[in-house]
Amino acid sequence: DPFSAHMRALLDTHGETLLRLAAEAIEHGLETGEPPAIDLSLFPSELTEEGAAFVTLKRKGDLRGCIGSVQPWQPLVKDVAENAFKAAFEDPRFPPLTAAELEGLDLSISVLSKAAPIDFTDEADLLAGLRPGKDGLIISDQGRRALFLPQVWEQLPEPAAFLSHLKAKAGLPARHWSDTFRADRFISEGISPADLDDPKSIWSRNRH
Image 1 (cartoon, rainbow, N blue to C red):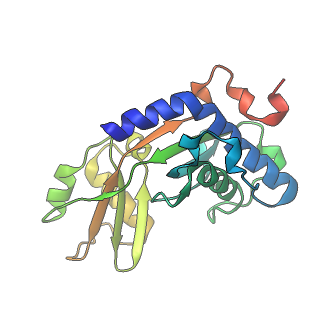
Image 2 (image 1 turned 180 degrees about the vertical axis):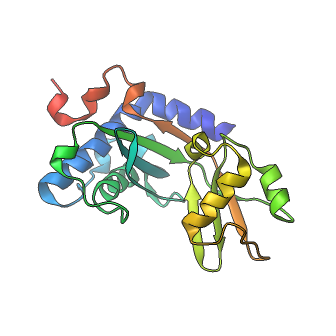
């Protein structure tokens, strides 16, 4: 898969830069209430190409915020910084992050491939075509839309459960089906501080 190979190489080279950028966006937000301004000239060209990123925050294993872009539409570094800020302060499921919560905050970044529509005749056909552990999925129907990143398969390894939970996220009944139901798949590659030699180095106060 060319996307995975390219993105894995990018994250192996620049993953720490992206994680630091996400951490800085959160720290900047705590201090100013605003996302940071990004100077694209400070970054290598492969990080200023358009990219779609999700930033996921967890504390003690529990979700604390997750916001991202479904399609590439702005430079990757900008997308990472803005979505880190939004995951910390603008995820409607959670109150804004406080400085006290930085201790023990786990941050991860997923970079998404372009989504491609899935062809299927009915729900059974769609379920049979899903690739557990690999596919991220976007569903839409009747003006509603929802997305699961590939890592959700870790909690929901069965395709039928994966799809019914995604329908619930979209506000659709678990048994919902219609002729206008649409599904798109994507893949993603991720990075988290655990992948680095010094996981704490991404936070400014831990850098020496």
